[in-house]
Image (cartoon, rainbow, N blue to C red; front, top):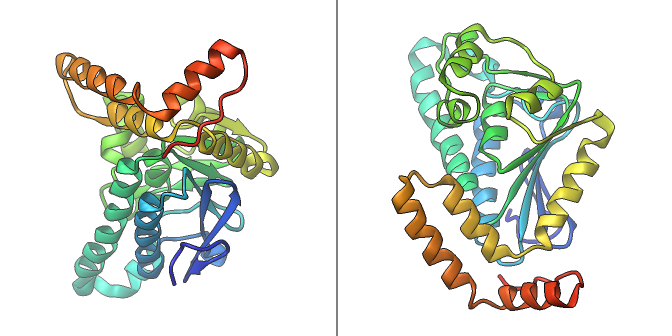
Amino acid sequence: MTATSSGSSFSKLRVDHPAPGVRRLVFDRPEARNALDLELLRAFAEAVQIASTDEAVRAVLLAGSGASFSVGGDVKLMDQAGQERRPQLLRELVRHFHTAVLGIASMPKPVVAAVRGGAGGGGLSIMLACDLAVVDEAGKFAVGFNLIGLSPDGGLTYHLPRRVGLQRAAELCFLNPIFDGRRAVELGLANRAVPAERVDEEALALAAQLASGPTRAFARTKELLRAERGLSETLVAERQSISELSGEPDATEGLQAFVSKRPPRFRDH
């Protein structure tokens, strides 16, 4: 089933549109604390791709049903696969997982994570791949991969040291401390920590605000922020981007609104 209509759903992934221009993808395995199995990851990767190319979508919101955002990979599934079949299963899981993570990072629109109850392992990897995150202040967070004898995936070894530095990243990966949402904000892993009952509301308000903003400018800003360039290359890219955006309707609207001292009404895509 596609994710193009309001209220549609994949297996183990709910899709809805809680605000104009906002598409919400909700991990829907609450009985397993939204552990990432093959079916869920396939649906997630597909839903991210659809949201990325759907012009009606101006911002994406990720959330989890039940008490947790996601505890990461389905450890029971990995254990049941047995030693001989496990490598093939992991390759298949990671293939869909990485497709989703790359889709989040390259999507030309903002992606917000609403993280109630915390996140671990691959769930934390997903949170770090998003542009912004609102977290449960009392939620529990941990890297956790080496507790089951595995190395991190889902882009965690890319995003984590860029947020916290190499030594702190090594500490979080090797020692697996459990930290709460407030500490996640202090470490630079999330933007806001609020009580659990306010996470969805705060994250949706943030996504709705972004959806009403200048989509093309957000896309260019996201690309500039995430690109691996030196300073000289970055300055060239910035010059090209701001020059091209200056000819877009959103720039005209933004400038006129600023001069007229009124809120802008961005509609370009």
